[in-house]
Length: 359
Image (cartoon, rainbow, N blue to C red):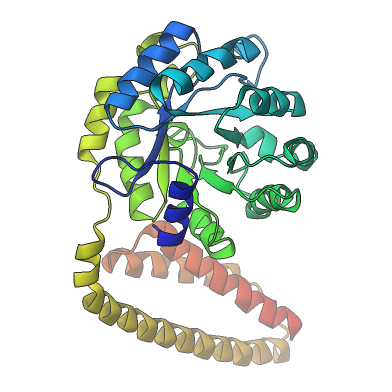
């Protein structure tokens, strides 16, 4: 994690798990009853969690599903703050939600993926939140659009909000596999590069969509330098009114915390020299790779001239199929992932065609 962004979260009053530098906001997908909220909050506090998450308003894809208890649940969260001393967080999707949450004195608000995807809605929320000092967490949009995510955060900042963070909850895909959403870790890395000063948490529950994958995703998030986690925990997950399959029981959550391996900075310092040497080796290999690509493009230019002289088309389908088959075979022998080899081959071929089309 970034020390500066981690310290930012701590300055906002978010306490790490005992003996670690891991921030974790946990709680049920939705606040279903006062008894449920107090039960899970009590259990989580005993496990060292300092901030409870619970959805009050639940925007659903289709009508007819449980859409939350609404403002009725806000006093339940107030009770958690009052009796347990925990910070409380919920999602807002409209200016009315923002106003009610602020009046109730909630500690953290987040903007969901569906809302982030709508710049008009984000702007309305930014206006409604003006003048507040409550931390605002912005989840990534439903689709993998980095600029849309960045833009939502910028709208909050332009409204004068200084406590803004981000949450990676994965992206919808037309071809779902084992996971509910694609984590698109590379996009999270791009986000870090664009906004290194913004804290970034990961929501493994929404990425997984199933509880048996949450530990793996949580560890991957930690390994990729996320500042913390937002994990859904319910007293009786199978009876949950929303997203039952992705919520952990308090016992399973305790097991997850026990099996996570937060980064140890002292060990990282010991490995620093070795890491530096390996990175230098990577830099040298990258240089050699770029030089090889440049030479390949020079050869493509010569091929282009010959094709023009013989009045040949730029695209030679049979030759392209031969190249792709050969690269797949060689990549397999070298132990490279087929998807990586194919992507490289297609990029090189596309660039070669562009050179030839330009003449």
